Length: 447
Image 1: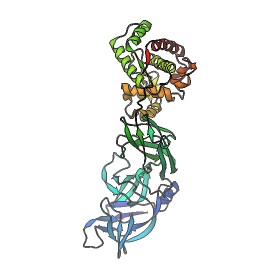
Image 2: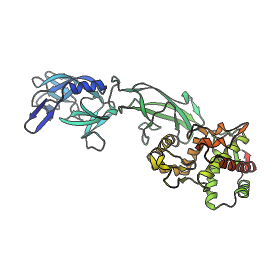
Image 3: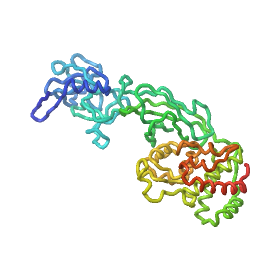
Image 4: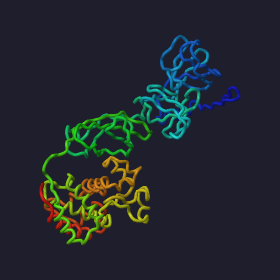
């Protein structure tokens, strides 16, 4: 049905069919709306003609009433200011439409379906809007007598079948304390299925990125002893956001004397006798690795023999993957990276040559940096070491863990290669590991 108003304004409405389609898709709840039937209708700041005129509605537009009335005057959601008033008698009718409610503090209203479109105002929390169209996660509404757009991720009061609700969230299964910055978070939810999550120690999620949802999620707490409060939120396929939940845990780094130190003089004497001379750059790289290995709590810090052999295999892997530089590097060439998830942007980087977009995504939450958006940060030594150690000991790369091949009563250097890259060069790295084992045995002492 089409009307031409004042020869300048054309409003096209697909009545019934359009709203029925939205209802079938579950995009919005049903509300009673005020439909403008006059060619135009003044909108005022209060219930009377003596109040300021704010704007004008036009025939065929739909608005949702707030529930407040004053005689024939009704208050409706019209723009980003306070709810406005219209004289409803003889100029309006009622209709059932699909609508949605703003569930965030304030929702940006844009001129088109995307954040690159012009910002034209905001819709306050709790305000209802008649849905007249959609484009992906964006919904079109009448706003100040113009067809405008709002993001559906911030809509919904829980009654819609596209809503998602966090029903539980905890850190390390509600443990009160942890001596490790690496924790596991668990969540439960109701409503629609989540596809993304975000997590942060900041209540406004500043700096946090949305990541693919998993049932078991790892998170790295900030450095420094003390109570840590972590915030968590989900997002579903329709772009709707869940409520935010939080949990707290007290972090205190272990002060135990458990663990081992590496005597540098003995280490380098044996190293040079085994592999030959070293450049200063190589020495600098090795020194950085030694410092991190000594304070790493993921290897077997209670068993000297196992610890030395696990460290030996980490050194073996590093030697091979970074071509004897002992520093994080980028994979040479582009021949192999074309088959990686995400292409050459996610080519090998670091000590263990982190590859594939999905692995960069997995490691982002572990290192506390968005490696998907900033893949070259995988070259930073502190990040590269965490990627290598966490990935090898927790089986992130291939599902295989280093502790499954090197443990008390078992040392399988050949199959330990499966932790990073199947059996590629497995015999070569096993030979390196046996050499590094002798170096570690000549230099390792208990704390």
